[in-house]
Amino acid sequence: MSANAPNARSTLHLPQGDWATVLDCLSAHFPAIDRATWTDRFARGRVLGADGRPLTVEHPYQVGLKVHYFREVPDERPIPFEEQVLHLDEHLLVADKPHFLPVMPAGEYVNETLLARLSKRVGNPDLVPIHRIDRLTAGLVLFSTNPESRGRYQALFRERKIDKRYEAICPALPDLEFPRCERLHMVDGEPFFLMKKGDGEPNSETRIEVLERRGELWHYALYPVTGRKHQLRLQMATLGAGICNDPFYPELIERARRDQDDYAKPLKLLAQALAFRDPLSGEQRRFESRLQLGW
Image (cartoon, rainbow, N blue to C red; front, side, top):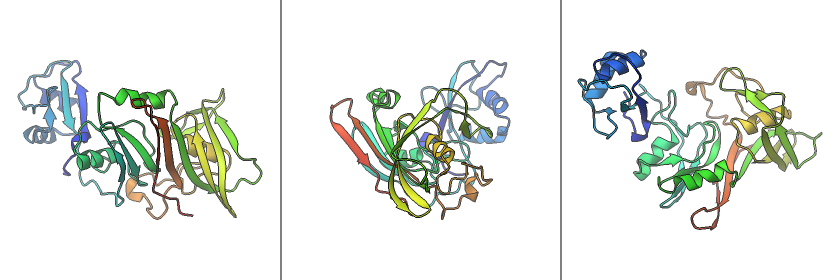
């Protein structure tokens, strides 16, 4: 069993039931995890109360009790790419995320996430991403390092006060005029992790420019106004220029599991720059990725 970083912690408010102990409740609530595994986690101090202190297997059940536990994934494979810290101060951390590394723990990813790596690296358990980018996308991710100022920076994204610039390599679109503004009504697709074009008023918007033309492939700059899931990937695919090496759009390729990732063919999408006026200092700030997309 792999060792877990502090930020792999999850929280559960115990549901209504007639269990005698917290152990009984957790064993019933998570049937995929056997009782022996939960007992081992209690013994190793991996189940905590609201005050952060380890609970024992005899701790009495109480409806609504706040319990923290650490998700563990057996034999979690390391992702062979390193993130870079581009900026760190008392309020913000800016990181360059490599392709294939998820931002947050989810599913089979616990230690091998940007959050877990950075939290351990800088020794800050209060580190929280202010926004996210897809696991397959590389580039800038902004983290809050201070809970007291976190809301001010989160508001920048909520109120669309951050300018975001992405770069992508996609097939050429010689029949379209650029720069152009692409608006699309996006809805949930099938399977559940995909998005698709739907009917109705546009709910996503991106400005698209061409940076360089090389025969059948072009290098694009993408400026999203909105921030919907898979927005850039779906919009480019809808235009007829799906981002190179995208396993989801325009057609789903059945290799979505990490152990089937082809590290030689990363998604040609980069979160290249973030710019905003700092809500605390009023200073105009801009951060740029040091990564580059290869043709």
